[in-house]
Length: 171
Length: 115
Image (cartoon, rainbow over all chains, first blue to last red; front, top):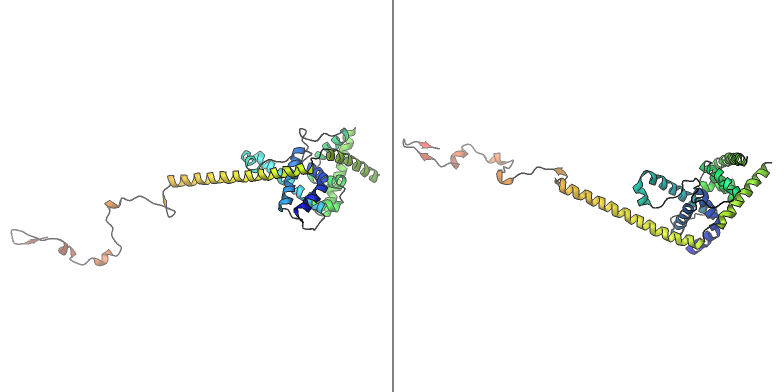
């Protein structure tokens, strides 16, 4: 795939990719933009290559997810070693919503974001991919690099926990 | 029931998607940001290389200045002017009565030879 074709395909996916980056960074907009830029860079530089084993969208989401995890590890390292921040550059959010930089949400969606922030990362990711990105559970499993059964378990548990939290906050 | 509840979640996530899409940065801005990100990475790598080189050079200078080493072994300085070198095979050249050949004999008044 030529760089122009890659850029054109990425442009089509851009809004969805930004949503996924937001979810991976706990709805921290600045961190999500950094992760998205780093992911685009990997793809356009050829450090991440599309092998055609999944759909292009699934693959791009996988790259974004891995980049966000790397950024979180860097952020964790930066907290332990102050010098590492200087060497490794900016970091991403820790996967939990950050009130200061989070996107402005309506009351309903703010409740959803808060509830998602209380879920374990894997459950939050599977729910986002299925309900927000309209992927199947199998596609979500491919994005996250986990077995289908594992993704299904995260999906069911996450859905139950999310509903319970939303009902609790409604009362 | 379950489908209705799933639909409610879909609608909730759909509202979140619309909000996020409205606030998404332009694709070309993201690409420009990616180029800036690339420069940032290069600068960080140069910084790492610079710091590593400085640390290595300092360590090397300290080793050279504070720890005289020859061939990886610590040595003691010897003033060669105060020693007489003797080869390990010198004993082969020693012959019985060699001191007689190296000393000049003197004659005493009694007519005896004194070495």
